[in-house]
Length: 157
Image 1 (cartoon, rainbow, N blue to C red):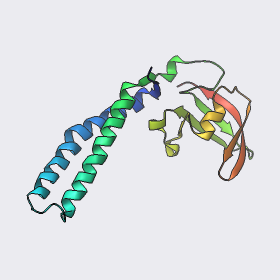
Image 2: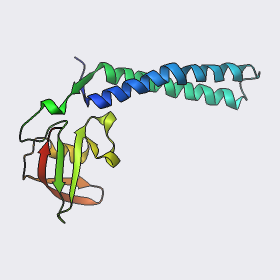
Image 3: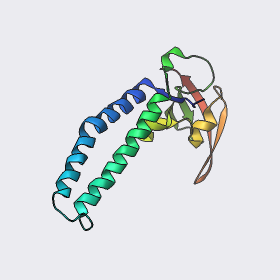
Image 4: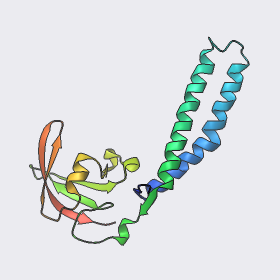
């Protein structure tokens, strides 16, 4: 049985768009670059050819990765969820030890973007919050040491 990959609809749609871009724009462009570089003759010392082949390999690897993620995607709509425990899709407001609040939405690995307040459910802080309730203290082990937060608010939006 294949393991499902949880993600929000927005993440699913952006992965689909990236896959479409790779297949319809990037892939044909790199094929043209390879053909052009081949026309220059001796391939053993042809830097353009080797660079294009390397780029082609990276594109193909990303296409396979995206197709795999999309085929295993379990799209979750946080607005259909409710409860008093932190779970995938929840938007959680935390208070740190200095009473400074920070808000994160718990999302899939491919969707994580800390600058936008979206953290992966597999990240240290994401893992430490899953299953916790309002008012719970959460301990997160970071490279700079242990940090403690209190769960101030749990929303599903």
